[in-house]
Amino acid sequence: MAELIRSDRAASLQLSEIVKISEAARARQAEGHPVLTFGTGEPDFKTPENVIAAAHKAALAGDTGYPPTAGKPALREAIAMDAERFCGFRPEIAEIMVSTGAKQVIHNAFAATVNPGDEVIMPAPYWTSYADIVDFCQGEMVTVPCGADQGFRLTPDALEAAITDKTRWLMLNTPGNPSGAMYSGEDLEALAEVLRKHPQVWVIADEIYMHITYAPFTSFRKAAPDLADRTLIVNGVSKSYAMTGWRLGWGIGPVELIKAMTAIQGQCTSGASSISQAAALEALTGPQNLLAERCDAFRARRDMVVDALNAVDGITCEVPGGAFYVYPNCEGLFGRTTSGGKLIENDADVCEYILNEGNVALVPGRAFGLPGHFRLSYAYSDADLTEGCARIARAVNELKGA
Ligand code: PMP
Image (tube, helix red, strand yellow):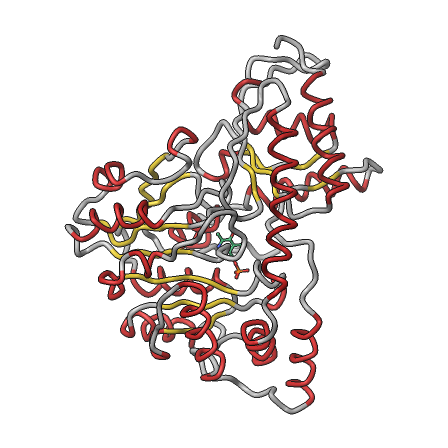
């Protein structure tokens, strides 16, 4: 067999912790264990029927050719309207590009702007892919731990301390994955105040969970309109409209950045699928009542999960402001031992134990740059969540040495 020689770039890419836990869960399932997987960030709702119908219609009508690399004008127009309606600012069409998911927007941005050694400030906990994409683009992660005591949010002082003359980007995510933390308008204004002193620092604000919020949402571009010339807003239909598989997201940023990102995309995917663009157009311009309905359903699940986890001795869980994750602290379990005599020393041990003893798959916090926690996604049915939390409680109660 010929030996594969990996590029330096590809060699740094690891199998994600989330994929590893999903594989471990699947392996247990294959052995006949009834595993409940709360590992992935995917709404359990279905794509709305009007959206599917619009995609079907577009395909039958022959909307099947290559779309413009930056996205179809009608969709970009709808995105501008959507930003005005929900985020309080109206971008120009030239400030918008459509990509194959929000993930590709972020990839395009870093690929277009980061040189080896350029620093990206990453408040932790962060979505794992941010780190992998920065790595892939040969940037330097500057991780800033943001613990539960500060609501998992970056403070202006911590931002100031992290900035150097090599800082290229600040990565913000509100509401955040994995913590669910949401920045208020005042929080964002305070961060913007620091950024005004450092013109070399640009901001990515990933706002993909903006419709899953339990308090008023503020977009970074609304909070700091004067920084629009160095702000990239990231958004998409995956989470809000339950459209993860359609692979459709967008970026809103200064025209020169959008052009540079479009050039990357042009030699990568040539742009998002024309059918998915037709679907997203309908999602944004069709009825919006499902957003509030789904958000209410997520809020009820959040409350149930937070209460259930806080009732477990050794686990403490903050109440998240948005998204569909909780990020409880499990350090209270460290030092306990399993019935098989294994010492629990860290969050990975906790997750391994809960998978093997409780048949519940969770993701260890070390994957998100802030250990001592685990992530539970509550984008699952009420029945599964109730059963899953009961299993976690039972497994924890069986540990010795509390
Ligand atoms: N940003 C965040 C914070 C996410 O959690 C995810 C999905 N897990 C994405 C972006 C990716 O979204 P998309 O499906 O649009 O690529």
